[in-house]
Image (tube, rainbow, N blue to C red):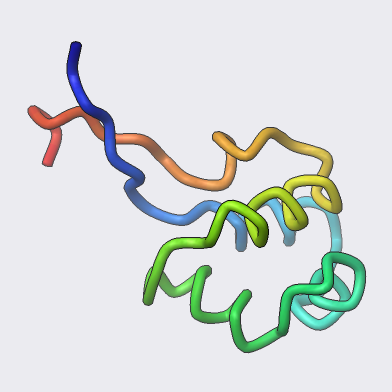
Length: 74
């Protein structure tokens, strides 16, 4: 079984499609605006708790927050 890894963060694209600012997403999700900015700029990966909170607000699956890479795509 191949191990997949998260690739590029897609939160910015989903957030903009939903018409939300970073601050509004932060207010609704309980995740700080600074953290959302860091996630969107691929500075680090979301914790499971943050990813779940963000995905609930964006009405998407946690899997939708990142592109996913197989080892042969790295």
